[in-house]
Length: 207
Image 1 (spheres, rainbow, N blue to C red):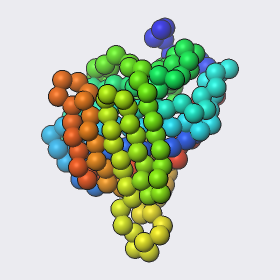
Image 2: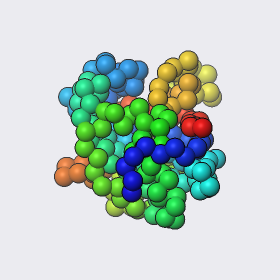
Image 3: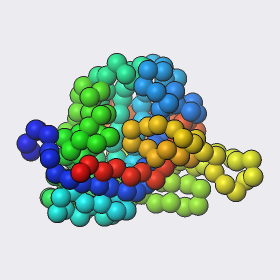
């Protein structure tokens, strides 16, 4: 794939959720300059695209998981990142998604790409993402399994949210959750139990 920046217009809307080893709320989520709870921040983003196109390529229904391993101060860079794209994507969709998530297509992922020091090879596995009431689940066959669930709210009906919040990839309003994850990325992988979780309905675009 050509590693020069793409000039293709694109947009994507859908569901984004995450789980990392920080306590709720991950300080690095608020700003990369704030120290995360642990010496390394280990986690993932799960992405389901409900609307979207990359040039002439339809992205509806695409699912991606991005794992990360970052310093306690995320702003220092040197992140280790791996992309997993649903194996059911065709070649054009795979190329488009990798171009977007590696930052070559600009937009929010272009900003995050500045902090990535090591990008592990992209993998193509079956990715399933489901919503069951207050819970979002993702399963990557042979790689990752996780669920994030809304924390208990005051009225026990509506989710607890962060509002008017700036984040490169999330929407301005984000739901707070706790997540449990088992992941085999890299040599050691990671296991999380009731740690920082977050979700929102994103909208990204580059014209």
